[in-house]
Picture 1 (cartoon, rainbow, N blue to C red):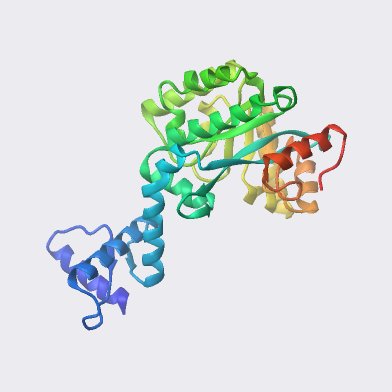
Picture 2: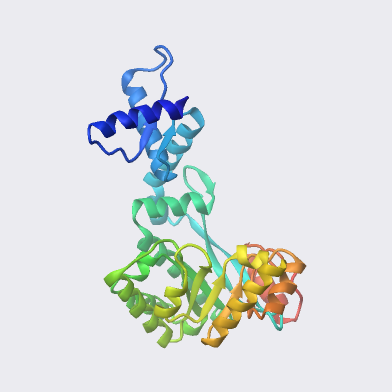
Length: 330
C-alpha cells in the first residue's frame, strides 16, 4: 500500500540520519507524463501536505487542480485589493433583552476579476499566505468608514465590528492608523469596534504591542471584541492580557447550549465574564431552542442565521429602518 511503501522510504532515510518533514507522492503509470511533469506533481502533493499539515499527500487530478486554483488566487489577491474588487456585507447583532439591532459585523466579499465570486475561505487564505493581512485589514476598515460617512446621521447610531488579524493588531502604528482613518471620515469612534481574530498565536514583543494598541483604542471609545472564545488561540490568557469589552462565544458552544451539559458550560462561562466586567455575544444562533438557551444562560448580545444572514448594504439599510420602527427580525 501507499502507506507501507512510504514507511519503508522513511526508514531508509532515517538510517542515513535524514529527517523528512513532509512527502509528496505521484505514481507514474507507464510514460503518461515526462519526468519533469511527474516531479512537479510530486512537489504539488508536498505543498498539499504542508497546507493540510499532513505528513504526506498523494497527487491526483482533483487535488492538483485545487492547488493550481489556490496559487492563482494568491498570485492575484493583491491586485484584487488594488482594483477595489471587494465589497461589504453585514450581519446584524441584537440586544438579547430588547431584540433590537445594536450594530453589525462587517464581512468582506470578493468579486474576482478572473475567478468570479469567491468564498471568504479562499481569499482570506490567500491574503494570509501572501502576507498582506495588514493591507487587507486597513482596506476593509477604510471601506466601511467611507460607507458610514455617506450617511452619518443614520449609520453612526449603530456599532460596526471589523475583524483584524493579530499580526496587524501587533503593528507599532496600528492604533494611530485606525484613529487617523476614523478622523479622515469624521466618524464618532463609538460607532466602531475592533474584533481580535483567533487566527494565530503571537508572543513576546508582538503580543505586548497588540495589548498596548487595543488599550489605546479602548481609551478612545472603540469597542474591543475577542472572537471565537473557546476555540483556537482565544483563551483565558487573552482575558488576562487584552483590554477587551465583549467576548464572542464560538458557535460550537452556543449551539451545544441546548444540551444539559452544554448549557451549564455556557452559563458558567458567561457568569465568569460578567464577574470580570465583560459582556458576551453568542454567535451562530440558528434555532429558537438555541436562542432560549443562550438568553437563559445570561448572554448579552445575539447573532446568527436565526435572525439575519449576512446581507448587502441595501438590505441592511432596510433592516435598520425596520428596526427603528420596532419591527421584529424575519
